[in-house]
Length: 155
Image (cartoon, rainbow, N blue to C red):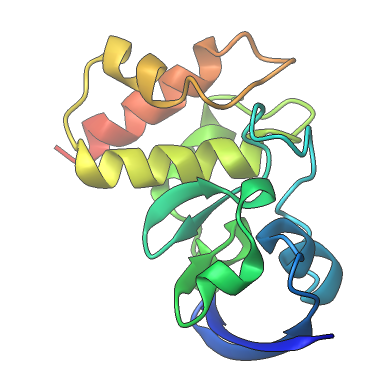
């Protein structure tokens, strides 16, 4: 039996009719076509599916979509404002923190949520803040550099 769900995704009020067991990840990718939310491990270990729910980073593979009734969801597609990329997105590009790009959406959204709460972190703090997101390509150095550069620009 499908159930009606109302939520706000990237600023738009949306409705969907979904099965009660549908994850937020599946709703976003399969029903709403926000494919920037990646499907990695489906067990909350890799962080590729990270989105913001009311401004907090969550692993969308672990959340039942119905838990997001009335909440505001931000995917990587909604982080930019029109053609203007978010400073973290720009910094990731400028610092070569994107290789295959699979982890990038989750990494950027995790960093955004974390920096919103911790605007002046040390490099060690940043490494801890992104520790729930796996990257198989970069070795994290360029990712940390990109995040630290964003912090420096905001001072």
